[in-house]
Image (cartoon, rainbow, N blue to C red; front, side, top):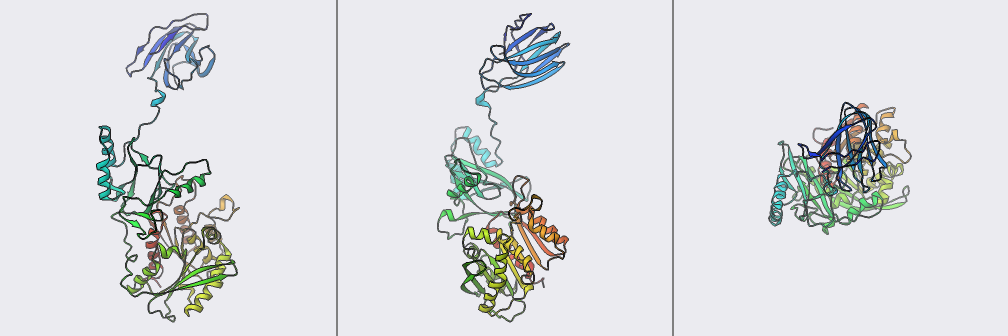
Length: 531
């Protein structure tokens, strides 16, 4: 209740009448004041309460202020108010009161909404997007437990997939059980290691998305990620300390990973495009693998190279394709490239392919060599290709030579081909990092590769396949993302008259997508319908 108090400013002491509750459940009090008269109102609110109200004036003009217990002004809400003035305030602990002063005589009325106590100043949890989680929340509110829910999830497998408002969409809910402090989603459709939300005080952590029904992606769950006073990057990297396969997911990938931290979990919705070649190579003739070592004088290091030659390889066959693929170790451990090529060649989907899988040594070396490094491009043209010719007895046609990679590897494929277009005539980029630019590049030139293409005197003599995932966004709408910069590079290439094919997939930044993209790119560049 509003407690009226005596005015402390002369000439007139006013004792306000007891206030009445208004229709909305708040409090109201009013009266009349002559010019120069002042009234004080105690809002009867505790420290930390959120106070909302209105002053309504009838025929005069008033000043409205907040004062402390000694009458010292704290906050000014308005001067010469002729009609209505709303005010908002969080109460302090100094005996604060509202002070009304008549500039011109007239009537006034103060209406206060019920104060919002400090303990209640938290938005209610939104209604869960998932019908199943919403039903569970209602059951928990009635005193139920989560045992049956988790038994059902263990049998069905996670994530939880439910119908959405359109037939081409699904509600997908990622779930974790029993974390103490937090759970982060590593990978998946989010853009920044999204946080799962705890359902009340239960052992259920969840996050729901509405996703296209053709989604295919890999993810991990990171429970109880360390939260410490480090840099933003250090705290993001800490996710890797606990990120592991989802224990209730029925589709681990790769299935033979050495532990749960090295294993992802797959989400493959019902309309996801097939990856027919990923598992089709077991019953077809196998190509030959040679494991070589390449010492580069330009780069000052030695790396592993895997040379794949298809079954029945004929070095004189004119339509043979040479594929140079970066991150070669990962494209054998996570993606079975030799088996994929065996199956595609046996089915006649593509002509014979000689593949060179180039190891990246380590992450630091990868970060120096792949992004726009001219020495790395020269190593490919002047050191790697002579080794391939000498080992395979095969002199590749530049028009049937393709550089390929993912992320920084896609960037390297494009920049090396731009440097040596007479040697490498094709680019197959998977989620290429075309947001990259050399250190010191002005803000206006950050999309460096697109800028090089746009300002070239002649269009580069290349054929280009670009692919990106629709979840490869920056999340803030400002930072250039993989998805955005791939679209921009596509537009620049097309404007220059370069042969380009561009595809987007309902996926993220992961190898489970790239094992299908690689096959799609080879078909687009060298399939039956291509020269």
